[in-house]
Image (cartoon, rainbow, N blue to C red; front, side, top):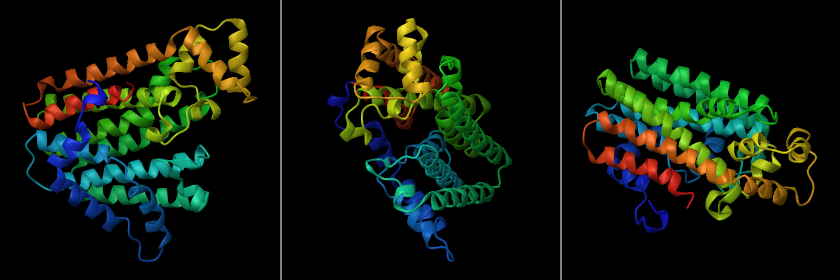
Length: 333
């Protein structure tokens, strides 16, 4: 898929196909993020929720339910739950990372303060569990509660592994499965469960979400080194400046000479960065062609996501999900 030849992006087509349900989700989000006693809660939440995000994760829940023939309304609550969990993690992440920008806008912790971001994130987690319970499904509650714990675990693992040159690709994958793929797979799996799909289809939806989430994060990490700042809302090299060991760097460290390893120790482990270091980092990655190797990994995970869909019924939504997996890596073109 060439991203430049795609007139309508897969997630836009999916949003159109699911427009009625997405309107219901957005209405529910606005209702549940309200607070009678603490007006700062909707202020902070609205800053992020209304920031023009694609709502990809809640859309995956709706898509999975529709694909499996669901005709009830509990998928609306689940989609809102997924978005609240996602928003809560973003609020917490920006505090942990001391970020000043997200989606091209100032972060909530910059506009308000760290305390507000943490506490509003906590509020949204609590709201998400209220919504889960309303579905009356213990199995769905189990899926989303486990995902919430896995996300937190992944963030803590990243915090300890991100600046440790001993971090290898297996640890990186564990982090990505936690911080990103866990919510993708919970979103798709819970949609299938609430629809009463058979076990093989529910497993397929989990596998699709897991592989899609991994491809998505690998692509994001690659875009940090070769993306368009206007399109990504981030400056090229932000991960390097924040001393994050992502896959392109991990691949370069694994092949590093003694001199190159000393460079990575100074810039990543010790944080002593100076002018020209980003260019040198890119030169080392270029020497070992790690950006290309990272892209190959992202494409392989996208292929796994598409393969998982084979056991699901033929449907326009299934075609959109397949195109979405292609699009995740086509962003790298």
